[in-house]
Amino acid sequence: MLDISYNGVTLAYIGDAVIELYLREALISFGVTDTGRLSAAAQKLVCAPMQSALLEKLLPLLTPEEEAAYRLGRNHKVNGKPKRATVAEYARATGMEAVFGYLHLSGAKERANLLLQEIYMEQLLQIKNDI
Image 1 (tube, rainbow, N blue to C red):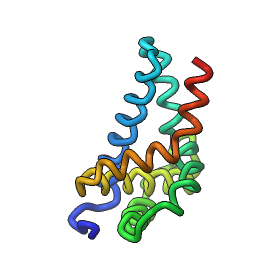
Image 2 (tube, one colour):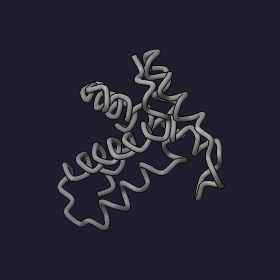
Image 3 (cartoon, helix red, strand yellow):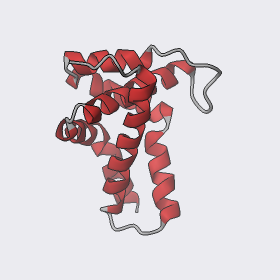
């Protein structure tokens, strides 16, 4: 059950860190030690347009509780215009981050890792081949 004491932005704030840590660990597993290259690769994967696009893979996999967390993050009112993304991309990315924040705070870390692996596998393999 979704803990309603957290709002969508709080869930997204934690979820952003969860996604970033997952991707950083995946990238360093490729043996790259140049932090500049690692940061550039990670940045491409966590930007709002990429997260918004990856959401198409994620949405069909979500449970009703995870969908509720997604909607909570997506529907949060944004003050100002996001950089490098449309308002819709930013809202969808915030919703995606909220899902992973919810999973982390619920103690469902294995579920979070499974979903992250599923949606990011193709991009991570491409980066691995490019390195």
